[in-house]
Image 1: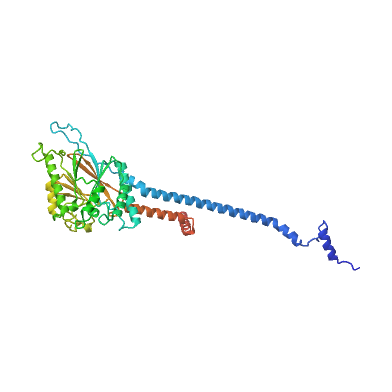
Image 2: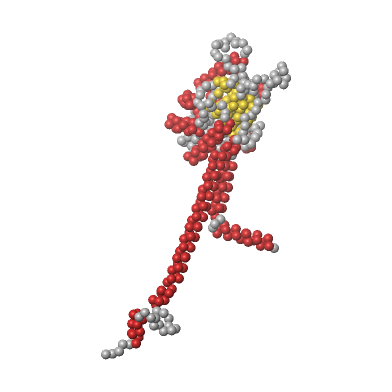
Length: 443
């Protein structure tokens, strides 16, 4: 029998025996080398995986905190620009004080204080309708007016609010459905508690200019707003004038409007008499107080050249001549109103800019600027402290639209910078600048 090869025997002995028969200096076999290397390699892989996992969790945690901070910053900016700014700006407004009258018989002895009526006057809200204006524009303007009006009600606590025409932007075109929708939005924006009265006069955008105006539109407007032309409160007479109907051309609506004013003039004249004259009848007397006229169109003036203030007409519009019966009332109608009613104060709107004009006999007319950002960057309203014999006026400005937009832009830029700082787009120049400054300091 042939003898086995020594290498085969050695191989059998290695696999079957317990002792290591590898010769000194000889490399271990493949299996021994794999076992020898696998332990430290596994530990390294596990350590690397745990390190990567911790780094990923740390990164997620950092990004989560960053996202939380950005969300808080965005909410803070929105809260400031859409709520707090109205309180901060209107809080600076205060009711004007009246001079305390003194008794003529005993100098220095004050009379019993007269009741003071606190009234707000605003104009030209121009709520957009279904025809003109983008939905975003409509939402933005109505939100601005709602926040301004509600904040003013809460901070100033007026007793009555007067809106001097052009409440709606599309009243002259609105269908019955669109009109109902506009009215609903108006009462949402200008909602008020029951103890506060809200009264309004019609403007050309509410019922149309003279050539568009008709009885249907006037009645539709008066159904929403109190049609009373003359009313008294705390001894103060107010005359609400439909100035759109004072065209002076003898049309049916214009004739009825002038007849109403003549009747009001008659009762005001009766109230000024100490003894009831013949012809005044048994109707309840009005307080013996010169009235305050409230209307949309201003009385006649050539232009706004003599108007001043930060909310006056722009310089390129001041010297533009006004067109009678379009921009202002005609000279003849203006003279009639001053003669018939003999007012002590006139408040009007329509021009969207502020102006104060002294008419004959020292009668002051105040043109109230628009209340909406859509018509001017710095809207405002008038605050009046009124008694039967005296009045004092002050202006309250609303937040400027460009200030709000600037705040948004600055906040957006800061947020973008915060988001880019962790990246190399911003960090590399930043670190380079730090190194340059450090070298400069060591020199």
